[in-house]
Length: 120
Image (cartoon, rainbow, N blue to C red; front, top):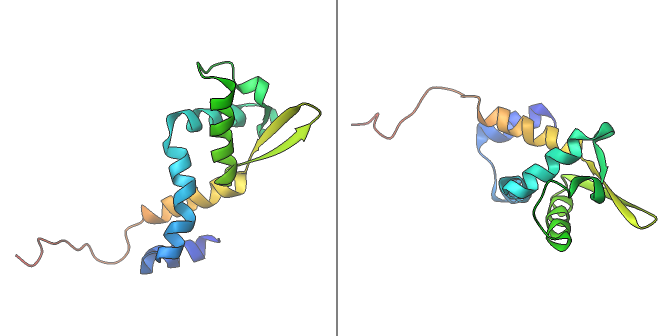
């Protein structure tokens, strides 16, 4: 979605379908473990890391880490590629840029300030 499309979406208010499209990514990022995992992947050269490289700082079992990575992948925030016995994860920079653009547009105040208290 381009910045103009995002601005138009925010200026008219999001539809239910638009909100339902964006919500999984925001929900995925709202979990502290997933946010840290995404950060660990992004911190590696090229924004790519093997699961063996990023699981060290976590006091979680491998299946739990795999679950969180699956949620990030399903939300479109990371991609994965199997190489021999390891899975490598890469940050989906396009998806993060779209979320960033949406949040930036939401932070932009359009038109006059309105308040429920204005009519009192």
